Figure 1 (cartoon, one colour):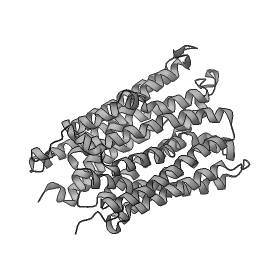
Figure 2 (tube, helix red, strand yellow):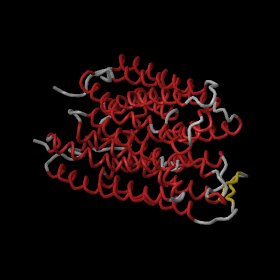
Figure 3 (tube, rainbow, N blue to C red):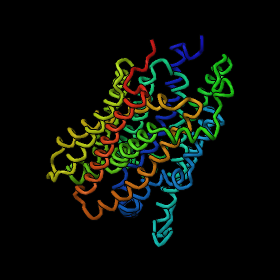
Figure 4 (tube, rainbow, N blue to C red):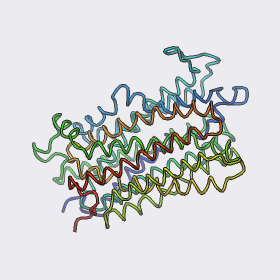
Length: 443
């Protein structure tokens, strides 16, 4: 029996790698609830950033990945060097990037400005963006590494459930960041949440090193990542990926869907304060409804897909729910309506659980394991264009329209585009017979 045929071994591996991913998700959003504090004058404990400065910082995590093609190369590194090497490198980069962000928040730069192409940023925002960009390389590299590890250990078993639990733990990290970051910063200092984030990342790195030991045992037991020459990754495999219509539809869906979710969560805390009259100390808890809701629902929808199939149907439904939520947030509602905000965030949490729970297990059905890392990296690479650009547009929109109507319409039409792409995915699946609507568990 192969080591990954043991349920105990599989689930231990899942918990270990999901812990590393969870710590990364916590750090990714640890500064999201701090926008209001960051924009306060230095005399009041802030950094004096503008809304545009925060928007640039928020989108900077994708700069190196997108404009220096690092995310694409991350997939090549993963398929050539293996899961263990790539994951260790990724966790180390997350630690380095967070150290730079901590320096940016704690150092006294005075009124120094960083100028590039006639655009100016406070030097603290420039350093924080640089650190976030380095962190982003490790963050995305960790994501594709963990995804390939799940496929390696769970193919033929509870793949969607395992990916759902991994996503749920990652969202727990996001929810924790949105919930506790602002209260910690207000009661201690602006840098304290980042110090906590560094400690969590070190825990994640240590957890991944434990996984490396188990994964090496899987190899020694006779199940290697490459069993013969036909299973070895070649650069010609990139062409096969690019010619696959299913790959392009999944990629385009990811660009639109995650551009309508991840950037929204970074702006949602201030939205709750400015539009719905929520107290700043608890606004982060309102924003955390979405990731907290996904903690239980993502594994549940993954289990549904494993047993009953209908993966694309779940993806379409989740995208339509997200569309309805953003258009709901765009309505001109008077402040003092927190119940409406809560209801919309609950619906968002359902859609945010349903679509990813079914989407990511679809990728191994159209891409072979030997080039799965490259495929995931190409998906995430293209997805980062949206994650880097949308926050910058939203930051500017919020400056000109403080009612948040314009920015919510941006998110709403982005989510609607994702739903239309998912419908096209269903049509192509019927023609190409990928099996995206079939259950994952092999009997």
